[in-house]
Image (cartoon, rainbow over all chains, first blue to last red; front, side):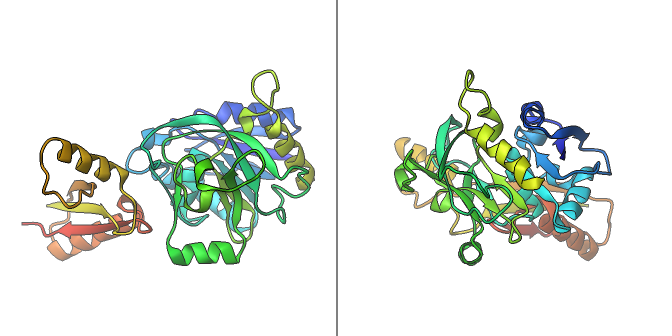
Length: 227
Length: 80
């Protein structure tokens, strides 16, 4: 399986993602934002970080960079595109997934482990994951998911919510919502579910000696689903 | 020609920064403030000399980059 990780000026989780993808069997290539062509890929990842210093709105500049037209075409033709953290912010700015990510409700940069509940498994990202709840890491200032009422209805009707913030038992309540996001949304799909944007970082949970291994479950499963 | 643009958050969108500014103003003794909403202001100096054409171009800029229409409104200030 071939993957590509896009590096934007200010990306800082691109190499972590590279390590994670390779650890679980992907042949990964790093792709520079100013390139026009995507290498042949089964998965494209927009990594976390602070592309363009978060100027104007997080992800807004990166969403207009040269490589993104190829990424958008790839996604629109059914290609798997995953945006993590800043990558999620870039995805919403391209319009590939609906909504926006606002400043965290309490204006704090949040950096901690959280639990997320998988809302939908009828997709290549979460199909066959045994667990209902995963422990991932979040580190963001703008993760407060918001969309219009019409968009929310559409998202819910199409079952586009991927994961919600919850407690370790999978209970989705306000008190387990770290950033004020609508309906505890931590990640969403596009309508076709080949594009996934999420705030949590699975690539930070791939080594038990450093953190946890729920990211390992995620990546192992992902490559199997793509085969 | 210089054209200015003001970007504001839509009414229903939470503005935590505006809220904190409001609270701080309250604490400073400005007790008669109803609400504070924070926005962005841009000055765009364009080579276009035709007023209408320049405004149309800036409107396109607002829609494509300067504003995110899910959460923000834009207002173009007439060039003088």
